[in-house]
Image 1 (tube, one colour):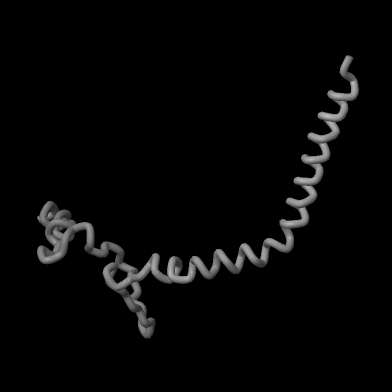
Image 2 (cartoon, rainbow, N blue to C red; image 1 turned 30 degrees about the horizontal axis):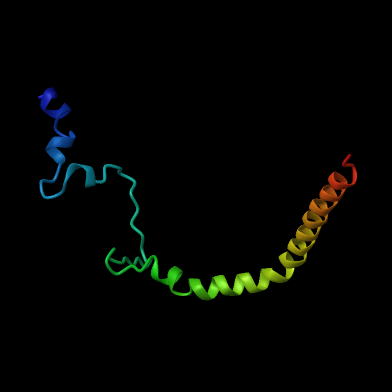
Length: 98
């Protein structure tokens, strides 16, 4: 009798056969969500890339035009410094020829 009582409430005897074992809730204090609205979408109904890629060209153009005013003076200064440096190096090389 004690063996039967010990194994009377084990998982295999209490298990439902219409549900896979990994889907069965085993905890006793599981509380249901009363009043919470839960909505699910099928993976085939979700459009993950389309909202992102739909306005991507417009977003790229806007970001380039907005950022151009900040980066163009820096690029012009960089080009000027490099051009002056090359000219100055060539001038020093030609000036000190024998």
